[in-house]
Amino acid sequence: AGPKIAQFSSRAFNYIPSTSSVCSPHLTYHILTLLHAIYTTSILQSEQTVTPELVRTLIAEEVGQSQKLKDLKRSVLITLASTSVSASKLVIAEIRQRLMTVRDVASAEILGKLIQLDFDYVDEYIALSIEVLSDVNVV
Image (cartoon, rainbow, N blue to C red):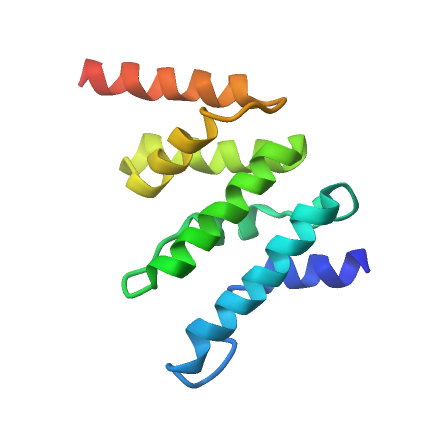
């Protein structure tokens, strides 16, 4: 089961699940809902499937993307970051890069939600928050 999920996670959102512009967002949402359920119920069995590409795809918010899909993508990221140290390291690396280079609003909002939670790696997210705020005050 692991390799199939790994193949899915690394390419899940790099293709259009349907050539129909009407169906594609709905299919993407349902595929992501399934992926979220898998990560929520068995992160230890599937955490090796979390790749930098998956994290990048989940953080990216495209113009025209529904709020419902954006919220689900953020929920998946928060689940990954708060339940798996290895996934959390990938998430924080991507958030750091986006905040330090382009001041990504979505990344800042995700970071804000994560620092309110209690999980093993939360101190790293708090430190990143302080780093970002210090950098903003210098500029």
